[in-house]
Image 1 (cartoon, rainbow, N blue to C red):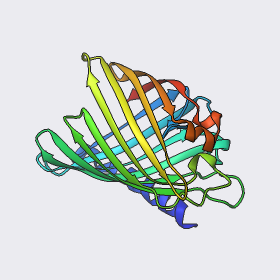
Image 2 (image 1 turned 30 degrees about the vertical axis):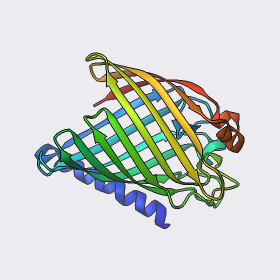
Image 3 (image 1 turned 90 degrees about the vertical axis):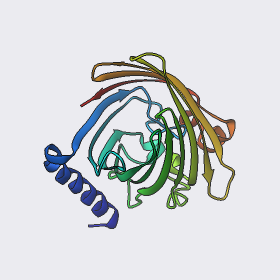
Image 4 (image 1 turned 60 degrees about the vertical axis):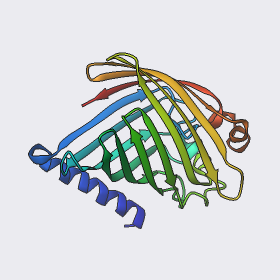
Length: 242
């Protein structure tokens, strides 16, 4: 079995194995959602079309004063023009460290897999990130993606990113409504990077959440990736959490 699928299989097996112990000392959760466009780092990963997405994860705390570990598997339908495949799987794991009563740091590893890419080329890549959170309202993230620079002719939406930086704000207006906004920058290999941003409103009712957001990128991203992937987009999403 090739190394990348093997890594994904091991991560998935660990997720399922952790689920067996979830009732004893941890928690199992997840979500299902439908979105009008799958936007990541300002680029449409679904070629501007709707996408179906799902997540399952396990969290195991090692004491409320120190933080928690987590592991999970996330998937989405995608577009061949952007990524070379029709679906994406992300195996992830990490730990959240509490550094004060109102702030934390999360270290996370994600393996992005595209199992049905056409031909012999594989576009899988890895990401290591760290996020500082304050009162679950303000977030700063830095991420390193060392193995996307080789995607220069295919999988256009995956090309060239080596690092990214994001700042996000979530402001609760009521128990049901939350405003959110984010600004980020992708550093690309060998060429100038680009900025991206989004702003929106979320409405939660029971296990469901409705999101409406506007996503934008600077003109350089549209020059690099084309209007279909890098245009400005209104996106609506319905999420069910369990």
